[in-house]
Amino acid sequence: MKQTWEASADGVMSLPSGRLIRGRGLHDPLPAGPSPEFGVYLLGKRPPPVGWESRWVLWPDLRLPADHPDALDALREAWLRAEAERVEVACWRGIGRTGTALACIAILDGVPPGQAVSYVRRQYRRRTVETPWQRQYVARFRPETA
Image (tube, rainbow, N blue to C red; front, top):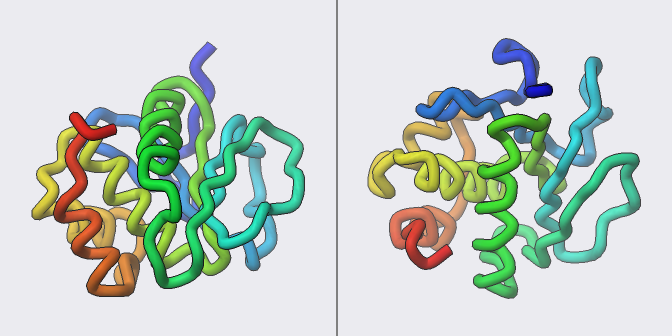
């Protein structure tokens, strides 16, 4: 049975395919409503355990992923699972790394790389994808490398 987010829920971004994926900051309390079924956590150190299936991507604050192939694999898994599951992507504040990851997931969903940052800024948070190198990472992201 397909169980995804409510499109109007806090932090939920709608992709062109209709998939819904939630971005959030881990320093904020867990939003009200159902829990994720899968989470991708983008942090410089291992996150605390959660009550759902999750994946950690080593990604220091204001930087890029330490292991590019692992990050690509995790983002692809999040995108695939978002078709039928409640998936969240999160970093500490839910802005730079989360926005960068959401922009890459939007590319996997068909958004052109040159439009992915503006797409996520409209759909998720206005100030997301904080650094020039994060914007470059998105601009150079290609699904065939995932």
